[in-house]
Every structure is written in structure tokens, then in C-alpha cells.
Image 1: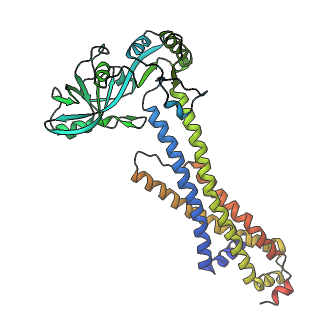
Image 2: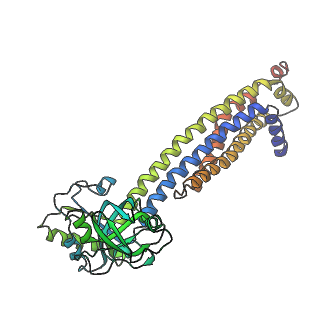
Image 3: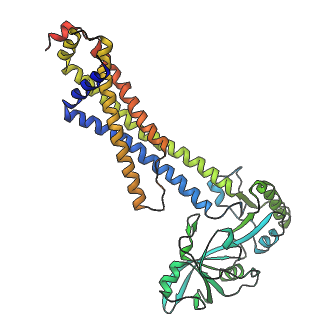
Length: 402
């Protein structure tokens, strides 16, 4: 039997039982779609985390108060106990280190802002003028915090775009007074919309000088110190110099945690890649279930077409030809289900991106190829037994059942 005849025979056999064929194709398509959507979720989470950390700048060292007891980096390093304060003076000493371009101390807290009787809760960040460049932020209006104001604590503030819109509407906020907590500030700048990083949007922030924030929250402890190096290749040596300086300032105690941006990215990337493979494996189980359905459908088909198989053998069809006919039918149905599944999966991923625009839920190419390949392989694997059974039928006995 020619290849074209085999394909035509398999197509007609499949179309002869539309309900059974439709259920088989549906099962296979659901399995492939599940693989694509779940891997899109996993890979989207990985991309999202990487973009969040990349948004805080490049060539970064991050100093956290408190010492992590574990070796290497894991997500628990981001929360540490604090036996000693990390102070603004510590941050000021780091700018003198060779290779350091910018240093931005960070104090974080919440407060209430009021303008003309309008009230709302806001996130307040105390930092220095270097914060704008370290975090790669842009100004929509005005200017940022004045330089050399780390210890002076001027009552000036830079606000996010959402704060501006809610409290000032279409009027310019520059030079206008606002009350944050029990202090009055003068607005000198507005951040551009869309700034974000590490899960925090700058659209709803108020940024004030470090000393002012420390006084408002009645503390001496910094939340973080962000250090920008001049060259990524020298980041490791810069880390050693920063560590040495801080240990000397802390009386020989290494009571802080120093992490690099690359280390954070690599760790989360590794965790989320494993997670993506895990959910893809879970979804692939549905393909195995679909493969069993293929086997059951093909076994029923062999039973119902026993007389037809006998007639083919009586006309000279060989056992390999009969086997190939059933394998081609199984492969054809599996491939059709896989193609429909890819369409469903891509549509599902597109819906996720539509509802959550910030989440880059794009299915990776390897997941699409693996889904289609697994569906086809599963269909052929579970189609072998029915095809073998059909090929081994005795033509005389098969014809007697017509």
C-alpha cells in the first residue's frame, strides 16, 4: 500500500466514528494546552522576577542589616535578624571605596499624607540624591533630592505620579506644601509613571532625605544600602572591599549581609526554572492519560474492523502494512489533538497576558515543541499494541466475523 493510500485509509477510518475521534482529539488537545499554559505561567514568573530585580539598576551590591547564617544566597537572606544597626554613617563611608560610583541608603516606612483636606496612606522612602540613578528612575517634573543632604534632613519631597494625580489633579504640585505625618514638606519633583522594582511601584511613593525619614520614624537603622559599582567584572573585588570597610566600622563583627544583584537573579532563575519543569511534568501526566485513551479507542477500532482487516489481508496486505495503517491513524489523531492543543494553549497564555499585563506569560518554544512531541510519541507508543493485534489477526478467522 502506498503512503498516500495509507494516509487516506487512516483518515477515512477516523472520520467514520466522529464522536469517538472527537473525544480522543479533545483529550490530547487538553493535555498539550495544559503543558503550554502551565509552562507559560512558570516561565512568566521567572521573567517577572528577573525584570523586577533588573529594574533596580545594574552592577549592584545590596547591604542588609543583620547576618544570615546560611551559606550562599537563598530567598531567606532577604529577611535577617539585626544585632547591630546599619547606619547612615556606614553608607557615607562606602562612597570613599575604590570602584564605588553611587551609594543610596534606604529607609522605608508608611505614613499619612494630606493636601487640602485630602488624606491617604503612602509608602515613604528616605534616601539620597544617588537613588535616582541607582534605581534608574526618571523625573516627569521638577528635580530630585538635593545632593550632599544625607545628614541635613531638608523638608523637601519627591512624589509619585499617582500621588500627584490624586492630590493635585491637573495642577502642578511643584513648590506646593504637603503634610506627611506631623511634618510639612515642599514638593520639588514628580517621578515618571511606571517605575518599579522588587515588587514596589514608585508611582505611589514619597521620597524624602535620609535624615528626615530617620527622624520621622525615630530610628537610626537603615532598611538597605544600595551600592553601584563602576564595572561588572570588578564586582567581586568591590564586594570584598565593602565587606572589609563595614567589618572595621563594626568593631570586627560581620553583622550584616552583603549580596550581589547577579546572585539574587541566578538563585531565583534556578528556582523558577525547576518550578517550570515541575509544572510541565505534572501537566504531561494528562498526555499519558490521553495516550491510554488512544490505546482503548484503537483496540475498539480493531475489534469493530476485524472483517475489514481480514479482507485487506485476503487482498494481499501484509502484516506490516496493517500495523502501519493503525499506527498512522493513531499518529494522525495525536498530531491533530496536539495542533489544536497548541492553539488552545497560546490562547490561554494570551488571556493571562490580557488580564495581567505586567506578567510576561509567554510559553517557551521548548514547551510547545515538547508538548507536540510528547503527544505524538504518546499516541504512537500506546497505538503499538492495537496495531500489533490487528497485524497478527488470521485472515480466514477475520473474514468469518464480517
